[in-house]
Length: 137
Image (cartoon, rainbow, N blue to C red; front, side, top):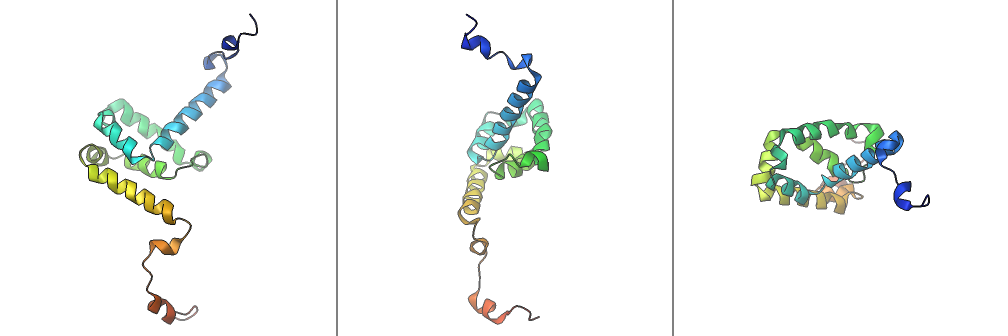
């Protein structure tokens, strides 16, 4: 019974490196979930955003904004939402205001739709562009 796969996957506490990796992956997955405005709204509706232990956990997670950790984030809105969650007013509004959820979702959609085309985010006046030649001031 030495080849039992259950025994081969020993608890992460037996190997500190494996435990650190598991914690890293779990926290990364959670931080990335914060990019979803519907998930934030769900947490707010369940009163999770009001729990002091959870608020402390959100503060602890700010280390993900450091360059060495942020490079693993696939959804940059997660870091923005993590920053917003540091504020009691935002947490409170997230619970009460479905418009805020929809607003965040729309802003996120607009960013993803246009992030490769910066000019799509601005209203460009073609006549103003024609009169502003490079080098003229």
